[in-house]
Amino acid sequence: MISRSLFLLPTVASGLFLTSAHAVTIYTIGSDNSFYSFDSAAPGTVTQVGAAGAAAGYVDVDIYGANGALYAISGSGAGSQINRTTGASSGGWKPNTNPITGLVTTFDFNPVADRVRVISNGGASNYRLQPDFASAPQTVTTPGAVTVDGGFSFTSSSAIARPGVNVMGAAYTNPGNNPSSTILYTLSSDGFLNSHTTPAGTFGNGVAVSPFGLGFTPTGSGFDIDPTGTGYALANVGGVTNLYMIDLTTGIGTLQGALGNTPGLTFNGLAAVPEPSTALLGLLGGLALLRRRRM
Image (tube, rainbow, N blue to C red; front, side):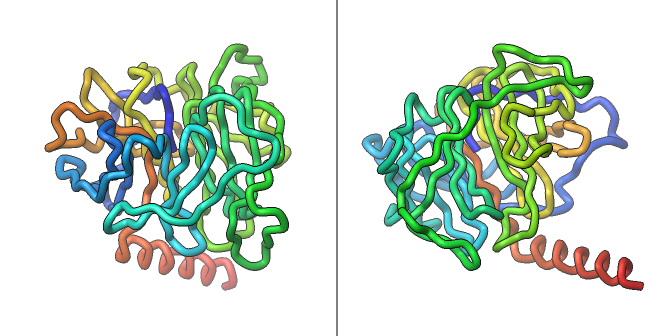
């Protein structure tokens, strides 16, 4: 999901690194108002999917786990489904109650509540939106309805307050079809990966997982979590957009490479889609774990 600034820990010990053992397809938005995609194992090759047009004003992208559709959100909070082959937009949602204030920073689908988490003003404004669709067992009573939730605040792992911190990106775990649980993670302006777990929905209780330690420019960034529990981030470093994998347990970010063949472009927003072989391996791994637990 989009982030105006990200912080990642440089690579310091190969034994701690994530690798590109499983690949995902990444979707993002270029500064030329076009959608792009690339393989996480080969970020040097970026493909233009299609033009969105400047009038759309899209700032972030995400995958709706129930059907695998790609959605984009504008700075005003309106959402559209995006054709992953042509970039054409259709359907989506438009906020019709409690107008969203300020510029949307990031959004993500909550796979348990089947609602859209929309964050603006760097986390000072935080909303729960009913899209025009839902998957069983959830339902939509008022399409476009917006519920105002509490703003974000953050503490250290030792419960020390961190004032003046903004949300730069947000993503939920288990972004599949009707999972039983999910955890919201955020990337914050003071350089931390944060978890929001206790109690669920308490956005004023973002606890630092780990500092990344390396500051990035405030444009060309994104954050998402794939169904295997791996985080991905884009960050603009010296005018070059880099892809990182993030270990949600340690907060360590590992450089996967720079986005190539796109001179002069920066990118905002990130949506991670597992490739078929990766999804199958994840399913087999989960079944093996379940079998062991039953034995």
